[in-house]
Length: 422
Image 1 (cartoon, one colour):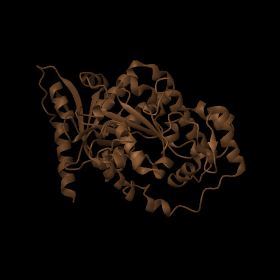
Image 2: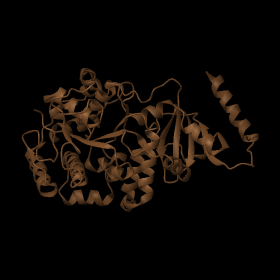
Image 3: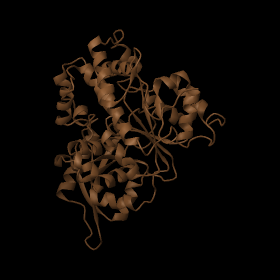
Image 4: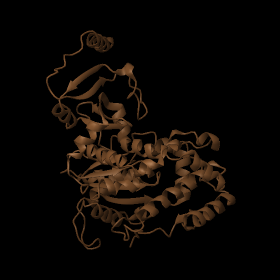
């Protein structure tokens, strides 16, 4: 077992003593590559700026760089303020198979064998040479714990497009905006997003379905600026079951002060946002979770008002409508994203509907810590909200966000562009 590591160590020492020759008589673009010796489920930006991990430095022509980026086993890994980082993954592993890897960023973490870092200027220049405007890309924005992974599996089952479930690069760009909200108006941010999407959706002739992480509110207004012809939709769920699912999945049995320190909170909120929550009366974890769902929904509504006026422009799908009419839901979804036969939603059946519906028979997150089997062991009855929390949710929803909550499950009933099951 030690032999492969000894060989790699020897290669490392040789490269230090005798660095590879670099031709000086040609125009070059620098790409830094390094093998991963110690890989243990790192965070998204792991290792990018850690000089101890650089094993090799080569100077390549731009053509060499572009050929490397176009390889089937090279994928966008993350984005920093100064560079784009790409991962070469284990040969023969399809990291886009959501039945095997529910989350793309974790698949890359688990199967990366080499990383390559190129300057942001070079990355943007390469991406801008492409002319695709997003007509082959669809987004399903979501609230989290609302069935979005199941929907991604449904799309995957049709075999009509490649599914990109929670690509980490979009989290990086969203986090950049959260750290400095003025960057949302910066043309460089739009260019970074456009480049990221083009590197993720590598083939203009292939259809892609992107399920972003639910916290990336920062890039929502920029998507149409980056790729104006992409298609978008929004998936949500009644607040009470979403809150219960979040509590179980993310183990939210903790003081509010601890929850605020979570990295996922840091990538979603600024300190000013948290102060505003406190001023609005958020004094418990349950209230914060409900507030987050309402704020996220409000952000989507505000972004779509004026430019998306019908259910066919930007449909709002509820998880409850999926359960009530699976076939109608999937038919509308596939037609909206251009994956089925065109025409009237009621009269024209979509190709792949039956295949998509088979996803409802399996656990969509069976290979993750969010699998139903693992979560059931943590479930203890139903989530009971005290009357003060319910009153708070109804009050803040209507007075601050203009959203009406109905029923015991706190269903959001007055959202625009709602797709309603027949």
